[in-house]
Amino acid sequence: MILNKWAKLRVVVGAVLVLWMMVSVEAQELPHSCARPDQIAIEHLHLDLKVDFESQKLSGSATMKLDRRKAADMLYLDTNGLKIFKIQSQLNGKELKWSLGEYKSNLGSCLSVELADGVDEITVYYESQPGAEAVQWLTPEQTTDKKHPFLFTQSQAILARTWVPCQDTPAVRMTYSAKIQVPPELLAVMSASNPQKKNKTGVYEFEMKQPIPAYLLALAVGDLKFLKLGPRSGVYAEPSVLKKAVWELADTEKMISAAESLYGAYRWDRYDVIFLPSSFPFGGMENPRLTFATPTILAGDRSLVALIAHELAHSWSGNLVTNATWDDFWLNEGFTVYFEQRIMESIYGREYSEMLARLSLDGLLAEIKELEARDTWLKLDLRGRNPDDGMTSIAYDKGYFFLRMLEEKVGRKKFDLFLKSYFKKFAFQSMTTERFLSYLKENLDNKIDFNAWVYSPGLPADAPVVETKALDRVGQAAQLFLEGAAPSVLAADFKTDQWTTHHWNHFLRSFKNDLSPAQMKRLDGQFKLTQSGNSEITHDWMILVIGSGYQAGMPRLEEFLTEQGRRKFLQPLYEKMATTPEGLERANRIYAKARPGYHAVSRQTIDQILNYQPTKN
Image (cartoon, rainbow, N blue to C red; front, side, top):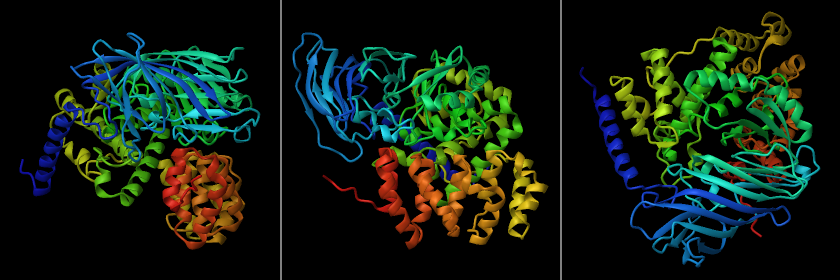
């Protein structure tokens, strides 16, 4: 086979990158951590912390059992904003010498600890500070039930270091335990074994026997109740949310069974979900044993539970086999989207899952146009950048379509056997892109041009085709409306009363150019879109509200931006407003009101969009 010049260049670039990554990983050059786990790694972490809502601090100690792999006498830990009091050896109780390095943006300060011979267990006495990026402290007024304060953490990607001194890199896995003291009227839960009801002391103990990376450390404290979903699943939530959440997640046990039938046993004992207050910045976070979820998926019709399938799938792809660096993020998310689609297909059918795939493809193609070419490679380059910059549809959806392409080329049966063996062989290990590709070539196919996907921009020519007659029909409805058809005719001819969330998503996203206020009024009059209680539909409608200047929708826009803090919704809406002087003024006015209720992850993104400069006290 004769390669053209571009194909040859791709092969060369790919080979060079493979060699570079092999050298980098062996030397433990971790771009987002000062840890040197090739020398000394944390084997087990024990936290003993008190939660103080008044001072907004977590205070206590972190005891670390160390694996001293080389003749090194210096331990390096990641911290960001932590106040360190002292560090003791557990061998003899003596205090150890330590120092904090120079602060670096995003990364924080490296904590260096001198270790004497024989010291393989230390205790760091410390406290977090108000404003720690991982931790959001909510007043009673900021919660759903407005009776008690609430706390939750969000450690991914490199925020664990803002509340725990640790080796904050996915290249290091550790087991952990914890003792957490909270006000007696509240319940504490973690990404570990959990209580299911409050006790009188306010002291709770936890254990995670399976080794995890630091970004999966998680804590939530609030007025929480628990109800079972099945023999190994359940829901935590504030009392007013609990029954609604249980109804919405009725198919969770089916999802667990479907996942196990595909890729092997669930290895984390239980799968519970906690619904956090609406300021949670993500749809979900796959903290093992306890998925953190946004209440914005509680649509009342079970139409948004693909998010639960996604977080459950992370129990294999991400939690079980983990990206070794954030440049390898697609190994977590691309696999998880693929797995999510397979779970949804198993339970709800191929037509349903193909609608999800079509929406993913449309979003991916749109984002590719907006990103720099280098940022559309599957293998990212995030050196000197915040890992959050890599949380785009490339890792999720381009990764998904790469795996779907492999499935279509080798056949589903063969591909399923490959994935099942992959999860089994590399369970509780960290994985680089290069190591995966090597395993892929040896065990699945060595003829496919992986470089076109992994080390090249955009979407390759062999990308899978997604065919869905249901959404094609929806696209026809949108076109007819643009040609002048009355919304009442669309409702009758296309049976819009039977549309799911995904039909409406595609319908609204089909209007790539801004509609006129008159067109918006006609749609709203028929379909009551401004009044929708479905967050996904509301978001897509609000994009059109902003673009059209539809004044009747503006009050709802402000409500939507202040009642929830999910970054997926916030970012496009603020970006859309910022494109015009009038919109920018509105965005700044709304943001001034909403910002105190957003998590730091969301604030950082919107601060950049609006060039917002926080006032320093």
